[in-house]
Length: 606
Ligand code: G6P
Image (cartoon, rainbow, N blue to C red):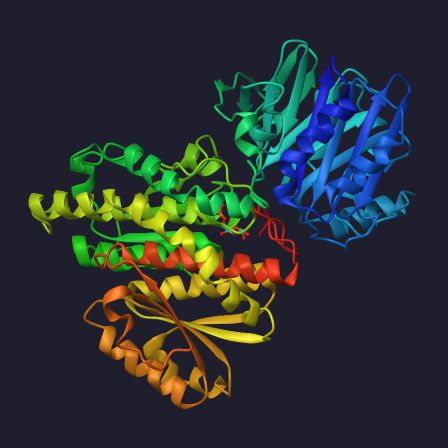
C-alpha cells in the first residue's frame, strides 16, 4: 500500500526521490510528499492526488538536499487530505514516512498528547515522529534511538526517518511491510520495492522482518530484531528501468494485455522443459508427496487458485481448497488432510497472503510461493518457489500476471498428475503440447478490441450487470465481474450459472446485461438452459462462446466467437475478452484505467 523511498549521498535527493515515487505510484496514489535535509534545514512538500501534483509543486522550488525521504499514500487511517499526507514532521526536527499500520497508535497518541505533543493529522503514522523527538531527549546515538522508538510500536510498518540531530543518516525499519536498501557508488537508497531504485542501482539488500538500519552515504548498518549487528545478503536485481514505460500504448493495462502471449511463453519456459517436465521448484519425488493443497490468495490471484482447483482435482486427483487469504488464519482451518499450502501472489507482498502462508507453515504444511516478483517476501519465506514470468505489472488491475498464474498452475496440475500416475506420460505430453499453442491463440483475441467497442459503449451506460460461467469458467466470470467493477465502477457480480435459479435470478429485469461464458464441453447444454432462463426474464445476453457452440445460443444480443480449444485452455481464452471489455468500458467512461479510485496494486496492510 503506501510506498516509501529514501536517499542519502551524492546526487540531488529531490530528483531521485520523485523518480522513485513515480515507480511506486502503483502502491497508492491518494497523496504524495517528500522531505529534504540540507545542513540545518528541513524542507517538506506534499500534494493531494496523483504524484504529478507533487511534481508540479516541486518544479516551483529551487531546493536541493543530500538526503531525503518520500512517500506515496493509500489512505488507511484518516481521509485523503493534505494534513494526512506524508511525510509527517515533529518539532521542526524529525520527519517520517510510514507504510503499514501502527496498531497501538491510540495509546501512543494519548501518552504523547499528555506530554504536550500536538497532532495535526488523523493518521496513525504521526505518533512515530513525536516518539522520535521524545526519545531524542534520552538517546544520542541513531541505532539506540531507533531501537527505543521501535520498542514502543506494535503493528506492521516500513518506515524511514530523517532528523537534524543525525544529518548523515536515514533511520529505517521494517516489520511485515516490505523494505529494501539500495547500495550505490556514493549514495544509498531505500524503497518499498527495488524497482523504485532501478534507475540508481541494482545492488539491493532486502531487510528481514524486525530488522532496522542506519543508512549512511557509504553503506548500511543493519540490526536484527534481537539487536545484533547483522550482514544481510546483497543481491543483484534484474529490474530494468526500460521495462516500465507504456511503450506506445495509451495505458499500462492496454500494454499488459498485449504482453500476455509473452507472459505465457516465459512462464511456461520457466516452469517446464520442452517435454513438459517441471523444471522449477519441485522434483518428481516432491510432486508425489503432494496429497492435498490449500491455495492462499487475494483478489485476482485468488481466482487463479479457484481455476486451478478444477484442474488439479481433475488431472491429478489431489484434493484442493481455495482460501481467501484474509479469512484463512482466523478461522482455525483444519489442515490434517493437506500437505501443501500454495500462496499465489503477483507482488509476493500482499500482507493477507503472506500472513496466511506463515500460518500454514506453523500448521506444518510445506509452503510454495507462486509469485511474479523474485525477491519478494513470499518468495523468500516459502519452502519452494514456482515462478511466473509476466514481467513488472504496473496497471493496478491484474491482467498478464493472472494469465501467467494460470499458466504456471496448469503446468503444475499436469506435473502432479504425471508424477502421481493420475495422468499417463502420453496424456501429460499431449496437454503440454496443447499449452504451447496458448500464446498464439491468446494473441488472436486482440482483435476483440475493435469488436467489443459497441458492447462497452452500452455497458458504460448501465448501473449493474451479471457474469455467468460454469466449471472452470465460473472463476473467470468472477474475474470478469471484478475487472469491470474495479475499472469502470459499474456494479457487477459473478455467479455459477447453475446457481442463478437459487436466488440471483431475482435480480433480472428488462435489459440487465448478463455476460455469459460458454465452453464446448459436456456442461454446455446446461449452461445454455441457464442462459435461456435469464433471457426469458428479460436479460440481455452477451455471449462469449467457443466457436463450435456459439450458434447453439440463438437468443444472444451479442455473440463473441472465441477459438475452439481444449477445456483446459478455455479459461485462458475467455479471460482476454473479460479484460478487454472492462478496459473499453472504463475508457468509454473516462475513469482512470491504470490507477482506479481507492485501489492499490500491492496491499501490505490487513
Ligand atoms: C490488490 C490488487 C489486486 C490483486 C490483489 C492481490 O488488491 O488491487 O489486483 O489481485 O491485490 O495481489 P497479489 O500481488 O497478492 O497478487
